[in-house]
Length: 335
Image 1 (cartoon, one colour):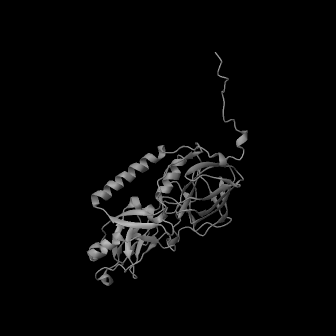
Image 2: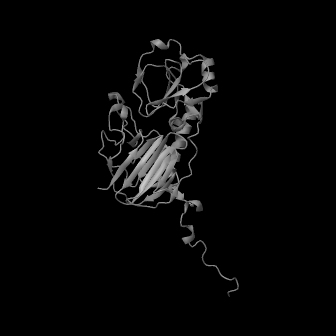
Image 3: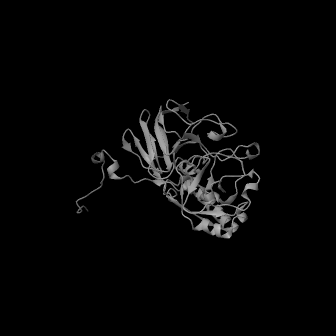
């Protein structure tokens, strides 16, 4: 079986797939990719199933080398990417030749970048998933010297790219009322929508704290709220009154009041918001949330047909003069 060798890795480099649904009753959240849309985009670029395991890189990537030629794709938060010093385009697929070094540096925007391999990462599944779940102790972050087994690649094109809407620069995030929304004063709910938030840089796969200026957000009788089930997207008003948005590796129960819940289609925008990116929350109706869910599902269904051939920038072609750029030229007077 072919392998990918980790020559170096940042502190938050893990194997991720779509996670482990169905285990909340036993205290295990789903986990999986912090940005599931990036996972699906990479799969589309390589024409493979959308839950194929890939490498997730939080803020900083690493260097990698394969023992055979590989098709790879890069999605999510853009990073500085090179193969033996030659730059690679993001949201695109490439050929990584055996023995060459793929180097992925820090993010230039956003939070989570993804490296996809043709055939996927073929580590042994645990509870039906290959996803690393650090909070639950399932798997571990990748380190220098690790080798990852690779699945069989069915083959396909490289040099493909995707046109991807910006979700790494913040923006408006749609929310619906949650279990304790009615315990917050109407004026505080309006202030919640009017306030510009930024992501605390200390966020992780469990969730992110939102920074803001102004009075804390507090619910009526919040100290007597019993712990109950919580899920990714829930926004808890923590002890200091700062909203905390739960992500894929969150715990399964909690007692902080929830001011709102981010709709699933917009949760990647929270996960990918880089430091300083402005987030605003907007309440929508149940009908609007369901319409957004249907539109998101339709977008995912179209992704496999969305990649298109990439037109290379001449500045990225070191041997440009060796290419025949014009052919079939005549003097114009042939009969």
